[in-house]
Length: 142
Image (cartoon, rainbow, N blue to C red; front, side, top):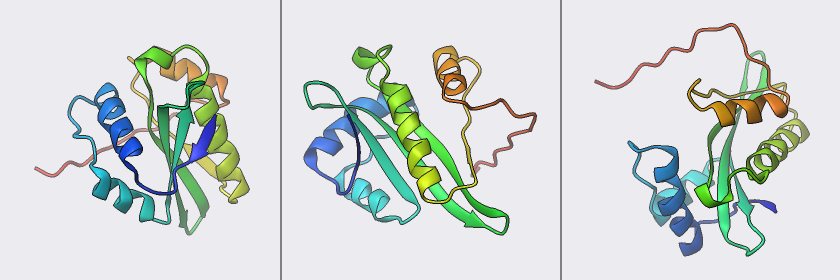
């Protein structure tokens, strides 16, 4: 089951503590106050996947913004708990994000994924994403 996170809670904080390390070894999971700040942003939709037991087993961040060429969106930080992978949770999250984005008038939805994340890349292609011929640049604070 997919739901939109509406407020921070101890349950959501616990999910961040468990899921974020599975996504990134260099990122520290947000605490409850940081999650509340995240959810208070009008451009952010945090989608949650709940397993049959009702526990949060995955999440996805949809970032929606308007620029001079239209309303766009990015999918970021897609993560499904190791124990729940391979059962369609990721596809349900991505499909729900695409539906929400299009309902909000988004013209295009983009995402990036490292080539080494083979399962994730297959998932995004199954969801209808097409690989673009583009360069992705990043500037990091020194």
